[in-house]
Length: 565
Ligand code: GLY
Picture 1: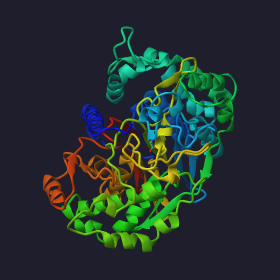
Picture 2: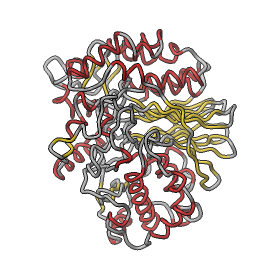
Picture 3: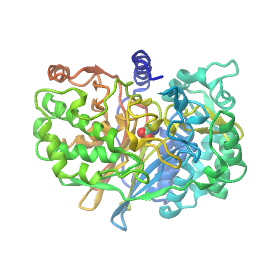
Picture 4: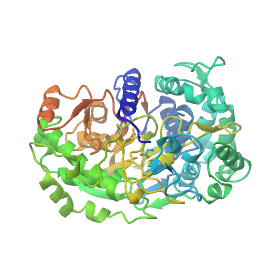
């Protein structure tokens, strides 16, 4: 059954309440030697401490990523996966690491279809929703290839947070409260996040994850094989299969991260480098920059009716292309060269009217009435060090607490990343995103992602590392923060805090944050946009380099804090 409009609306209302509850003030953080911006202060502190101990940006990013898996367990975890973009100062190049989850070998194209219809519950909760996790393999290989400190050293803060506990932050408290009912169905989730009487633990209460601490300690000592082979792998498989899933020990043993060629485009005086497929984020971001062009955005003004309409129309085009063309490059040929070519972006720009918007069918071939974008899972962290290295890393278990299936003895919460596939052409996933054959399920295939870790360089030196969490909102919101810095010359803190808009082609709705200028909202409605307020959008973490200074901005929308050194 597809999600009804009512269901979508209620989920949106829940999102709005969450956003309002967790929003704090935008605080600038400056450092002389390096910077870590994560969506939890303890995670940023973990990375900054590693920089201070002499580690490089990769050491710090791996430390931060493991730590955020512990302190933001609704968003990410070692049962999930992610993408990491690394600018290597010594080699003057950027590398991209894909440790996205993959579909189990027994997965099949119609595994979520019953009586001819995709059943969303099957791909979102329970054993079938779980793809083979990539997080541990990915972080371990990044550390091994480009880190300088032992894995055990960079994992120490995460182990400590899991073993000794940490105070629940407002964002996590809201996620626990919203999901308490579901958590009662899983022994580990119930024990960790609910009180003895079954009520949700709240802000400030200490969460201890003793089983997870032991698992992290094993990985720190034995390496990633401790997760993918042996007793921990057996326990994962037993738990997934008991929950109705199809994961096997062979799936875990076979998991491999992939080094990929990043994609890039020139924008103004900058080189913008981003994540290739199976991310759709990098391609969409660069296609959008091509459509916007680099000559006139600043002169149109920021958040003005003209600039905002252009941005919205641009997003409609790139999201229509996302739905049609993007998938795992191991299985489909994503026509990136054509999509990002000046000929294509100029042609799309010509199709944009300055005074009106069009029906969804004018942008793409398979629009559908779909759910609203949602923002619960995923976490982004940005890091720079004084040696000139930079990391942009986005990690996820998909929606809040993933599949709601956890492995009791090892403290691992498992993803529901199978929902990022198109269960059926045109059937919306939890974010309201539709897809085509390119993103159909196949054994060993990676589901399409919106995660958009991005690094911007100028004259061969990184000046911005940026990315975010929030499903499809990641793409439009990362783009706007990037434009705020590059085209509108804002510092990172103001660029991140500024109100944003979001359009993802389908549904045919232009979402705006309430602080977005009201006159612009009215002008956009006059152009034919269905304008709806969404109190808060993606959580963007950015690090900007200004000469020898580093500025860190963690999005106040999720309550994160950057920590500099
Ligand atoms: N799981 C959300 C994404 O990868 O886009």
